[in-house]
Amino acid sequence: MPLSRRAFLSGTLAAAFAPRGQAWGDFHRAVGEIIVRPVIDGLWLRKINSRFVRNASFATVRRALAEASMPKDTLAMPIVPLLMESSGRRFLLDCGTGGQLTSTSLAQNLAAAGIRPDSIEAILVSNFHPDHIDGLKSAEDRPVFASAEVLVHEAEWNFWMDDGNLARAKPGQERTWFLNARRVFRGMKRVTKFTPGRELVPGITPLAAPGHTPGHVAYQITSGSEAMIALCDVTNHPALTARHPDWQPVVDMDGPRAVATRHRFLDQVSADRTTVHGYHFPYPAIGRIERRTTTGYEFVAAA
Ligand SMILES: [Zn+2]
Image (cartoon, rainbow, N blue to C red; front, side, top):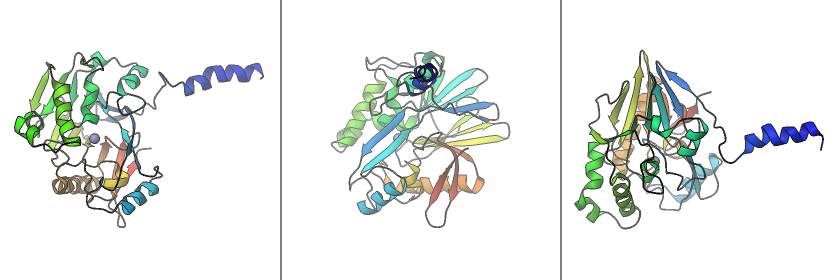
């Protein structure tokens, strides 16, 4: 092999394909004075079956997967937390699975971008499902973001921490979610509860978006004349529940309520042409929602 080619392979290309410490896309966008940076936690290859969508036939669901070039019976679900930076302060919206469901993790990708976990001042949580909160703690059960205040919706906290609700939880997944939320928050000192509609940190306001979970929130990010909405789990992967907003996947704990919330948000952001972020949208997970006549809504990724 010619030297130049070998040098090329051992240098640039090898670095480009290095499995650890690899650079991520590092997409940035300014919302006024706030810089938003989606950071990949990973891709969760979730096997699904006929029970995944309560009110659609599995054949229809599989057709939607195929139309989105996804593997058969597998929902390829991106997990993309959002880093927000303004005036030298850093805030993080949700924090991934801690690498438990994905081949990479938010912590790895933050490190690759040179962002120290202790530089994050606050973590804004959208809901207590494991793929949003597990990244708060390391495998050794220690807080990953040592300096961060964790901001949670009071109603979400009260739902998951209520012993009666735990006792009534359906065995299996739902009970696991309860026990997991308690494990993650056990011993965590800096947790602050909020009610939606009030600005939490400069420019960032939680919006009530119940249905996916009882206390699920989206976030409005505003600076100067610019605004963006982080939809969080208002819709799961857009190929499923944006295109088919009436579908009720089992991850939406109150299906009809989640559908109503989804229509309310997607109607508004498509009519206003608001820039959105979606936690389970393909990277960069930022773009717009367009209303379509043939399907429900389409996610159009930012260029
Ligand atoms: Zn989720």
